[in-house]
Length: 154
Image 1 (spheres, rainbow, N blue to C red):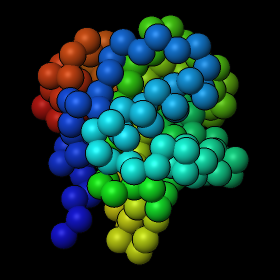
Image 2: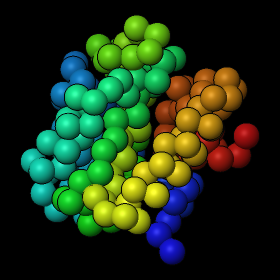
Image 3: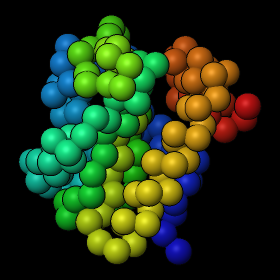
């Protein structure tokens, strides 16, 4: 069975809660490099290209300063979830028109199993962040441990 919950994918190695970037592109590439370095992605350029393909299809800024860029990619060798907080708000197409400073970047394989995992993960993250208390705790987390507490212990 392929892991398919946000908690099962929580990996402090691919979490950075103090990212110094100024644009959406810098944020995506920064988190993608974390995924590559940790062994989740084997071709950074192909993975980033696939993320941008999905970005071209619709908005990934869910509102409330949170974005969930995603997309399936043949460059993914292991399902993962990179999470980042940027030091300041960055422009991002979002449903409420607001900038972003919390980013959840999925790494999901481009195959049948990946398609199912992809949908479950999106639903899992969206459901958790739909709770105002969880969302506020996620936004203020300063360490991976605090972020884990915010997402899974509320």
